[in-house]
Amino acid sequence: MNHLSGELFKTLTKTDIQHVPYRGAGPAIADALSGQIPIVVPATNGQLIEFHRSGKLRVLAVASPNRLIGAPEIPTGIEAGVPGWIVQNYIALVAPAGTPDSIAERLNEATRLAFTDEKLQQQFIASGFEAPPDRSPDVVRRWFNEEIARWTPIARALGLTLD
Image 1 (cartoon, rainbow, N blue to C red):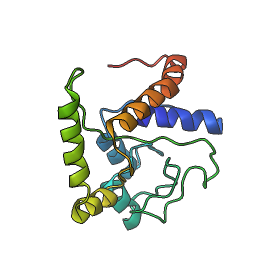
Image 2: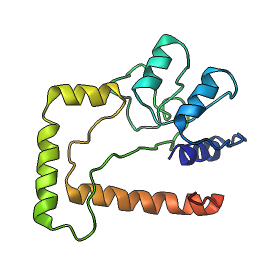
Image 3: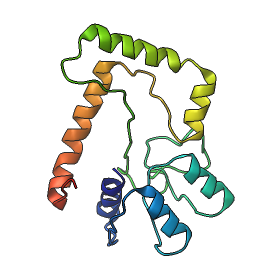
């Protein structure tokens, strides 16, 4: 998603930025911290927010529709002047196809219960993650299908492949 987010940014801003492949955001962020690269488009996380707050990196915008609860000082891409730059990662608990509905519902209920814990919620928020209010299997499934439909043409147009 980091790569696709960068490509979407390039398309929306009509900016010619050279994509440099990395094996994860960690090495890319390290190179940005050391000045080896001028810009990086990683997923927002607690470490990145701390680099921002300490002045080691400057997070220019987050690609979410709303400012993050855990970092409200950082504008959204839309607020920063890039309409349409919305890219959201979704962390989901998944099970193999064919898992009985009764088991999927038990897992969903356990997840729902876990998210009632205030300490867990605060840990997620501090890490740049915000749980959506409805995490039912149908909502998650619909979100994945919408994202596949959204990103497949972009990936194909760019000639991207999994490696």
